[in-house]
Image (tube, rainbow, N blue to C red; front, side, top):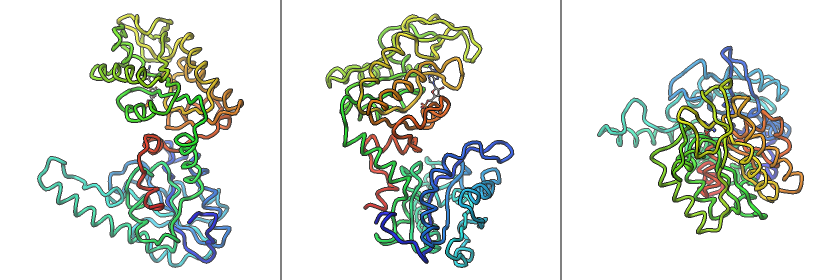
Length: 415
Ligand code: AMP
């Protein structure tokens, strides 16, 4: 079933969204992108004449009530965007009466799902090494089913529009789908768009395909790097992982971030790229700093010759040009992870060069997908988000999807 085919008239729909929005210390939303992302789905349900039960997590309350992570704080904003009053259930597991009383066009927001440990389904307060852990886990899995069943009982139809959590088998993202038949569960519009964007990268590849992997460490990106090696023509590895590669190749990297235990892995990646005919692009020069701060003194040096007290915090000019050249000619582009410590304004040039080249390639007809929290923050910082083909809301979920893994949240609906 697709959301466009479904008529929500007279139905109660329970929708899993990702309203895990950042809040300031006074509980004000600092970035409402995620709320806006779910609006097409929510509005379609209301426009059809359905009633809406919205559920989400916020933060990591670890199975306990924590007022700082209450979704009550965003109720007004959700109401403002939907143009209607939003009712609030302050315990998501005890909302049957409120749900039953909803009339068509009415909206109920459930309190943070993760205030209940059953949402994530992991036993709390017991160590994995404890002999009783396995039994506790089994019991929790049963409780998780009950919790999911309670949520399902509020509604006639289930919609999952939370791509950011689609790689988790949680009560609200996957288990709940077992309580709806195939005609009454579906992906929301945002999920459909995300799945299509991943499909473009995985199956409908127009060449050349350039992937840019950045961020702090090679260890957290190894799965996707290995998977991409079979698909891409150009693979740019940048950001903090530059220095693990430079060190592995015998360079001096000073105080730069470097995973000493991943030097062999770096050499293995270089070898595999050669075997597979992938053009691996690694930084040659960098902007080094004498302190990890925006105001540090800087100099451009070779990534192999960084003085002992200095650290590479951004790509150098020669490297930026190499990156841009590998991006500009591409027809398919994937970017995950910044090329430097872009949070410091003085170390954004590498990421900026990548973003500008992606925009240029997109203008020339390339399909470009930018995903993962930090690269999204980058394109937002540069004001370029609407100049790339697609900005994914998923971090871990996007990477797992591109690694070729089946996401539980999607499998639960599509089978
Ligand atoms: P990740 O979470 O692995 O995608 O990494 C993102 C983080 O990597 C950002 O917060 C960047 O500041 C950081 N990063 C990028 N380049 C460097 C670098 N050369 N040294 C230290 N951190 C970096």
